[in-house]
Image 1 (cartoon, helix red, strand yellow):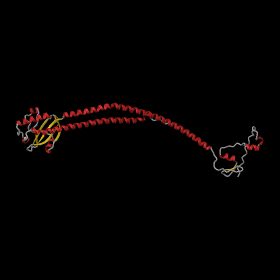
Image 2: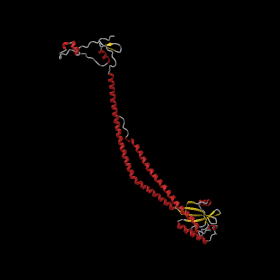
Image 3: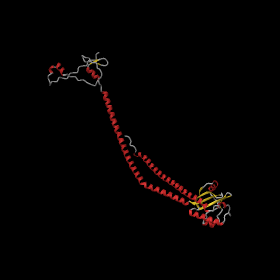
Image 4: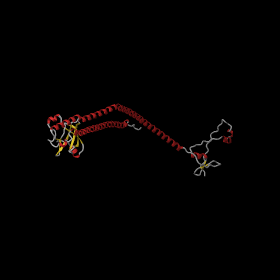
Amino acid sequence: MKATENPNAGRPGGRSNLLLLALCVLFYASAVAGYDVWSYKEHKKTLLAEIDHNLLQAARSLKYLLAPDFHDRALAKDSIGKDEELRNRRLVTDFGVEAGFKWVYTLAEKDGQFFFSAPSVSEEEAKELDSWYFYPYEDMPPEFVAAWRENRTVYVDYTDQWGTFRSVALPERSPGGRAYLACADREIGDIDRLLRRNLLHSAAVASFFLLASLPFILLLAHVYRAHTADLKRLNAELRVHKDTLEIQVQERTADLRKETERLQEALANVRTLSGLIPICAHCKKIRDDKGYWNQLELYIQQNSDALFSHGLCPDCVQQLYPEFANADDVVPPPATPPAVPPPSA
């Protein structure tokens, strides 16, 4: 009997399906994380685009707060009077506060160095320094220098001891042709907090939907386990049926083999007469394949399994024993078989 296969043979496939399910869950989590990152970047991009637009509008508006020829005259420390400086400071500071900017200011260049020409000034800064006009901008971002030299608008993010800011540097020219930079700074630390809060919100929404789908996942897993159990049971039944069938086939094959051997043995014992048999028309002797003429009885006995027993037919009884021809109750003694003469040529 063939050994029965291990009933646990189907488990590797089950482990593969469980691994596939785990990979699907991992893929879902990765997709959610990817969406969160993408949403974070897109939201940040949208907010920065709006901030950049507002910064640019503020920088463009500065020239309308100042005297038209202000930057033609802002050439040195003592080129602008105190009254005009205070007036410009008040207008620019109020504009920046109302528009929601940390600082708005213009920068003038002299001998390769940049100075604040019309800056907004907070109350703390006003107490710290009496005059901010033509104050040197020592830690000016290099992007601002590039904006000056290349005459192009630039945006830059930076972080210092006062916070995280996004700034714009807009190249402008006074009516007299003097170049200067109109700038605006906006604090964006709250933007980062808003983006992080949006990221957490997206993650929370994704987690909610994942938890909401958990009953369906568990139901699917239950159905899968039940289906797997049914398949294992059917496989076990098939294996038992296969083993039983193999035994039946082996037994039937053995029976058929025995039957075949018996038939072959029987066929080996069967001898038949066939073809044309030469027979004498008078004495009824038969010529064998060696040319000898034999009595009919001898020829048949030698070429088949038939045996003869002698008797008399009614016609011969009438001819040879007429006295017994009409005696129904008298049975003549059995005749002795005639001696078979030796073969003659």
